[in-house]
Length: 199
Ligand SMILES: C[S@@+](CC[C@H](N)C(=O)[O-])C[C@H]1O[C@@H](n2cnc3c(N)ncnc32)[C@H](O)[C@@H]1O
Image (cartoon, rainbow, N blue to C red; front, side, top):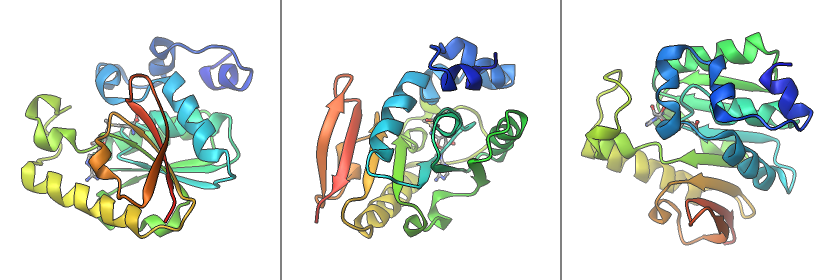
């Protein structure tokens, strides 16, 4: 049984096993940079609780969050990622495993209109712009200026969304969320936080 069939059959999938779907040279980034299967499942449950149908992963890497989530949900998952080679890996995995409810776009977050989505997942995507030791590779060149630009853009987009919008966030600063969002739940020592727009 492949990892996605296991997920559908509620068989536990450990990250080490899940990550074998990715090429060996990117697996080494998984521990630090990709969402674990368990966290993805927790985030999915929150995001879809009120019927969200179009979910955006802000900085999707090789697509782990969207791939895990799409296997057991009828919602549609889109990941945007500025490392084109990671987008190719995500789309190849979706195709190989017949996941028709997810896709990955090679682009910067700055070109994405959040109004096209109704719920969001964000896992500290801009850290590497502030902390050079967090860089996966040299495929993109980002620094403090980009950190501010990306964070401000996401903040403004979050602010523009309708009341009731849900966001699941992992290892992401609370300052990324406008005061119009309420923190409704947090777990894993406050690293996984759930937000709803209330005003
Ligand atoms: C911590 S990883 C999370 C990957 C994925 N969301 C997951 O949970 O498995 C953050 C990703 O965001 C991407 N990223 C950072 N800044 C971005 C930007 N401005 N536009 C698109 N992707 C970006 C990085 O290349 C990296 O792959």
